[in-house]
Length: 237
Image (cartoon, rainbow, N blue to C red; front, side, top):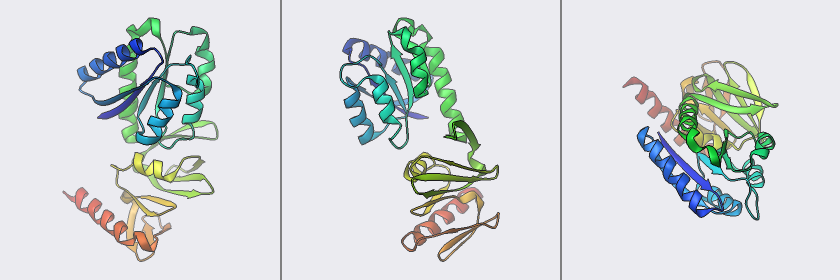
């Protein structure tokens, strides 16, 4: 497992201490990391827009853009990172729930950092096998193997699976990146298909084992055929 982690705090001493502490804990768990530090909410947004991240440790009380304001902005970015608020302001714990953080850590109670890190790693290991999103205010957790395909339309994304259909907000490019190691093919600007469920790739369309058809755009035909054949060869090895 490889995680890219950003640490954001206007206190440079604490920032570097937290970064080094987390790197040591994750190294002991044999988790590879790429880390970076930001001293403001504005710098964090710039870093995320350019390089993205899996996890953000975010201070709340910062000059300029606060941690809450940064967390609000993160909602509009593709591939939203997991947020852990780290603050000395205990009175903000309930306010932080509005931003759905993974955890709320008090700066005076970093003794819980190993415990929280274990929970974080379990979360990412689960996410490798499950696709998680929010639809209609509810958290949905689908086994990746049961997803048939995604369709993007009018800024909404529809997930078609063996369990049912859900609609929520996310860019299809972000989902494609999240599932790049799980045998999905972007056959059309608006469609991302799970190769596991493909029966045939015809000219201009994919036919699924469940009898649905999905369009294949002309400029993606060769790439779709190539990725499906690579997937078939891989599962036969």
